[in-house]
Each structure stands twice: as C-alpha cells, then as structure tokens.
Length: 46
Length: 141
Image 1 (cartoon, each protein chain N blue to C red):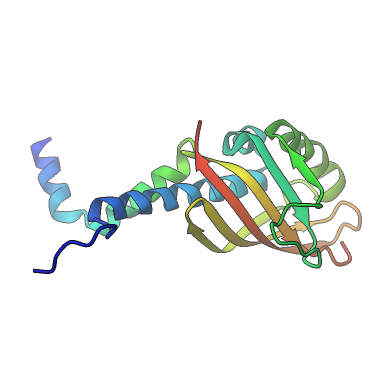
Image 2: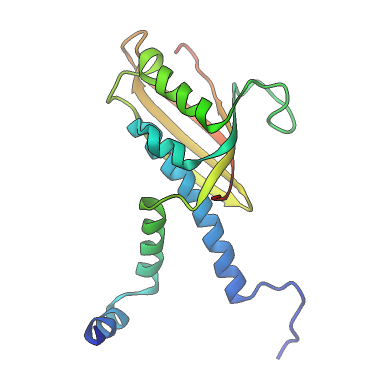
C-alpha cells in the first residue's frame, strides 16, 4: 500500500485527479437532480 | 501582505464551488446520455420528483422561460412521455445520438447546446435537432 501511495504521488498529476473526479461523477449516481428544464428547438420539417 | 477582504473566495470555497458546478454539469450529461440510450431508469435517477420541463420553439419569447409555455411536470410524466413517444412516434430505435456542443454552469443553472441526430419514424429519414437548453439542477434529495 505504501508503495502504491508513493507511486501515485509520483505519477498521478493534479490534472489526472480532476479527470478521475469528473469521471466518477459521470458514472456514479447523480449527486444533483434536474429541477427545471427549458428545451428550445426548431423542428423545421420534422 | 495585503489585508484579507471580506467575501474573497478562499481556496476551499473555490474547490467547493467547482465541485458544485461539475456536479450540476454531470447530471445534465448523464441525463442526455440516458435519453440517447433510452435508459428510462437512468433518466428517472437524474430528475427530481417535482421536475418541470418546458419545451418551446425559439420564436416563443418570454422573460422567465416558463410562463405560458406548455409544461410537463413531474418525473413520472417525463419518463412516461419519453417511454411512450420516443420510439413509437418520433425516432427509430438505435438511431439516436446526442452530442453536447457546449455546457456551461453558473450557480444552479446549466446552459447546454446539443444536437440530437436520428432517423425519423414518420419519414424514415435522417434528421438533426439543434437544442438550446437552460436547466436548473440542485443537490439530490
């Protein structure tokens, strides 16, 4: 475990951590819920 | 050293704000991915129970984006609407793709431009919808 942490400290950049956090937000349960949506579109000739 | 100014964001409050904005964008991304995949359970997970959806043409102008426009209110109604109309009336199965062009968050608001490509049920031809959306997201309850 200590080796792993030292490896992570050496090779995992702040940017990687940010990307990992963003990914976990995407794949897990949503932490927020949508309360209101306004969808605007033009359906020309649909 | 400069004196601290009241209300100046600290590193911690900036991280907290960043987390909130990313969290709100994440639920919008997940919602759109779930719609494209026609995953009704996942769509439901993204919505508050009392969610309200307005669907308008760009020519329909009003100040608050809501008043006077037709609305679908409640998670159950939206899931039911998508479940019953999406492939029966509008789009052929397995032809829907959604691409987010830009997604911007501020406070509780997320503004998202996306395209929805599909083959229509009616004419059986390729069609691209361009969407502008304004979404309010809050911490899950």
